[in-house]
Image 1 (tube, rainbow, N blue to C red):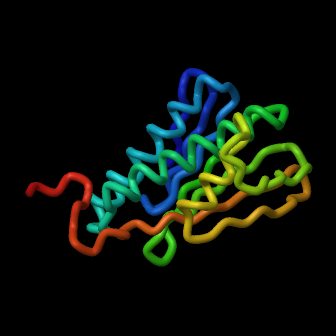
Image 2: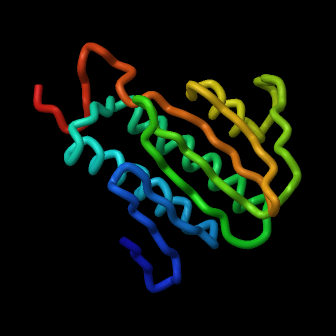
Length: 156
C-alpha cells in the first residue's frame, strides 16, 4: 500500500513489518521519528511483538541521528526503511553521498559530531555499505531489551 503526502513523500507499507519513506528537507526529521514511533506501535498492536519503552526511544534516536546526517551531508532526498528482523528493528538510511562516514573516537571535549558514536552505543549492530549510487547505513535495535516488562502501552 502506497501513501503519498502533499509534499510528495511516499511511505510503502509492506506486510506491516516494514515501512519506507523518502525525506527531502531537514524539517522532516521529526516526521521520520514519528514514522518510527507509529510503525513500532503498529507492529506491537497488530503482531503482538514486544517493544520496550527503551527500544521505542532508541529507534527514534537512531532514526533522528541517521536522517539528520543524511540531510546534512548528502544532496537530494534520503530513504528511511524500518524492518522487523529476528526480534530487532533494522533502521536503514540511504543517501546519495558515496563518502563513508567517519566514526570518530570518543572525545567528551569535542563539540558536535557525536551522532554515530551514540548510534553505535545503543545498537546491536551497525553497518555501512556503498551502493551503486550513494551509501546505506543500517543499525539494528533490539525490540524487547527489558525482559521484566515495561512494553510500550502496557498497563501496570
